[in-house]
Picture 1 (cartoon, rainbow, N blue to C red):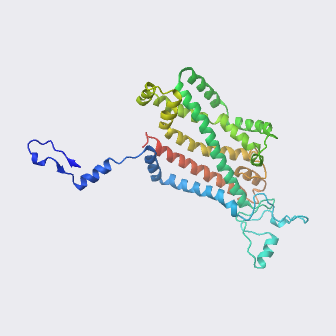
Picture 2: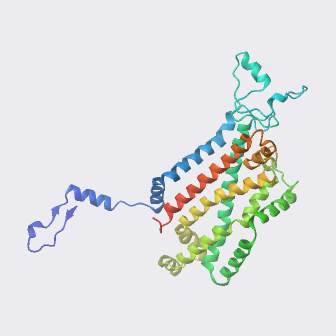
Amino acid sequence: MNRISLNCENPEYDFLPVTESEREYKAYETESSSFFTDGVKRFLKNKVATVSLILILLITLMAIFIPFFWPYSYDKQLGVTLGEPVDPSYANLAPFEYGATEEARRANGEFVFPHVFGTDSRGRDYFIRVIYGARISLAVGFFASIIVLLVGLTVGAVSGYMGGAVDTFIMRIVDIIYSLPDMLMVILLASVMNAALKNTLNFPFLEKIGTNIISLFIVFALLYWVSMARLVRAEILSLKEREYVLAAKASGADGKRIIKKHLIPNSIGVIFISTALQIPSAIFTESYLSFLGLGVNAPMPSLGSLASDALNGVTSYPERLIIPALFVSVIVLALNLIGDGLRDAFDPKLS
């Protein structure tokens, strides 16, 4: 690579070799990077968001893998033997306490796995119930956000691209849904659909988690997509006037291809941020519905149902209320901090 000089008065300076420093500068200058890569780099520079992401990953890994090797089950009552009376010493154990039979085994030199968070009033290991509750909350938050993403993205993209009467009609529906009291509608819909879905689930897994969670997903599909739709619509309205969209129309591309290939990829920042912020909202909604008895069916635990059950003995065993409440608070706070970090990293107006 040579440097061309247009200095006519000193032609001896024409076509001098490029120096090593100039070569390095040229290589740095031509280095390319995608929008997503730049966003990830900016996100990782945000220490609070990065620590929150690590914390959520740790909680997720715990919720997935700990039940595979933990010696206690979330629904097994300890001290219950077929044909023998229930051993009451296993109920309401404090953290790292043991039942009478376990104490005897330890006295004989046998290792007994500790009850890290103690046991509940029915003698069930509380730690594994909290872990299962975190698993349920994270799964509900993830799948509910996927549902909201699919519905909101589709409605928002169609509304923003079509415009005119179609856009007006869809936005009026959005305004009506926005005017409804969220908590009241969620409780009413969850109660009605829970009754309607009973005796209609023929799959073992769906029967295990119960009709309440299925109805909760339906509630999210009916009510919680409006924020996503509004954000996507606003972004599509701005992007559809760009030159590359006009060029795509001139080349004969139909609306479906323009939305799929041009508008949605260029709205990925808004979509990404909105989806990330929807997850903690879904987890909080599932938690308070479970607290009210509209969450997962017993004996499957949820963080909200664990907190609700702990109210009966809150003065005697406050840790049984504090632990699930702390897990919910940490998960929701960390996910909100991650969402804020993604907004700062992927919003071009803030970068």
